[in-house]
Amino acid sequence: MAVTDTRHPADAPPPAGRLVLVLNCGSSSIKFALFDAGLSPLPRVPAWNGKVQDIGGPAPTYGETGIAPVPVALDAQQPYHAALAHIRERVTARLAGRPLAAVAHRVVHGGRKYAAPVRIDAAVLADLRAFVPLAPLHQPFALEAMAALLGSDPALPQVACFDTAFHHTLPEVEQMLPLPYAAWERGLRRYGFHGLSYEYLSVALPERHGERARGRTIAAHLGSGASLCAMQGLRSVATTMGFSALDGVMMGTRTGALDPGVVLYLMEVEHLSVAQVGQLLYHASGLLGVSGVSSEPRVLLAAEGRDDEVGVRVRAALALYVRRIVREIGALVAVLGGLDLLVFTAGVGEHSAAIRQRVCAALGYLGLVLDDAANARHAPWISAAQSRVGVAVEPTNEEWIAARDAAALLSFTRAEGSSG
Image 1: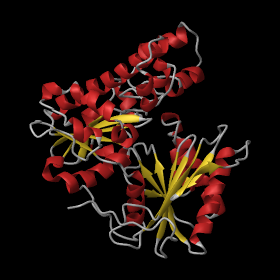
Image 2 (image 1 turned 180 degrees about the vertical axis):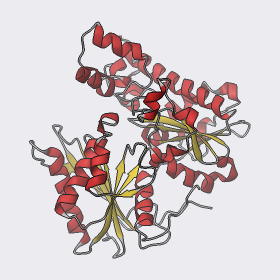
Image 3 (image 1 turned 90 degrees about the vertical axis):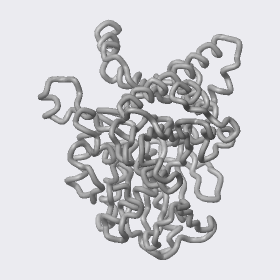
Image 4 (image 1 turned 120 degrees about the vertical axis):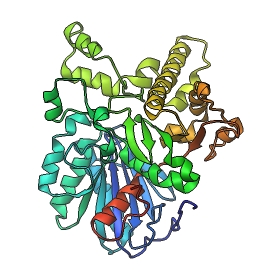
């Protein structure tokens, strides 16, 4: 079955149905998308979307469907509040008097309590604040948006959709940490993240690739944050991110898996404070830290040919990035007992043919053979005919999953494409 792709013209106002606004709030950006949940099936492409970028930075911009990003002035004292207000103003103007039916939020961490979308109220908001230390790059900003909307329009339904929820199918042995058992009883465990992305793949992959997607599948969500998920029967059975969003593969500015002895050394010997260690692990490591140039593989690939110290560090960063992805894929293959399908998604996974090629070249021992021409054009299927492992590229769609789940929770429509 073909992937649904119902589109609305960029210059047309959204239809007057049950309009659901999705907010995806990060530390320096807010993405928004408007879906009409009155249509069946729910369109995969939003009626309208956009984002504010570089919030708190020197040159914030606002862009939306059909319009190139333009500079936007934000209050320097409260830039995030100002960005939210700007989006709300643009949404209000766009709706031209038509009401929003709901707002759906991507929320990174739901803890043990929230394994499914939930309507937001003051009690839920209070619960979610407890998880801020586990996802400091995203959690506080989603909660800020929720609180602002609760204060200004308490009657407007808001729904939290959790990145951790997809991983509630992990077996206990994958959730447990090798700490005293009392830690498990207190809730210290491996949760997993990027669940909205993996949930979308669990819908889109069988549509595009049939029964093969229901076998032993590894999905590689490679963006500024990155993780891998092993799926069997379209359900999460193992994943690389754990208790926090620092674990697993090397990322743009985050370390990925790191010997905890390094953290002890930094604090005991180099006398870094907890705040300084947090800044180092979340913001100054990964590709940026090793290369000293950028957190973006695209930028590093353009600079790796330099014949100077910068080139040496860039090549080291890219080699380490690929090696850590390959190591984690190997671990997940062992858990799955083999591999039928490898899927690349998210910004780097969808758009960097070079990174995909380097990862796949190291997996030749699995019988994986890449079709270089298909890979170069970012085709949906990039493995060669003789490859024993299928390799796919699938754009993610976290906003659609959030809109779908919010509409289903509020009984606007049934959830389409559930992997259950």
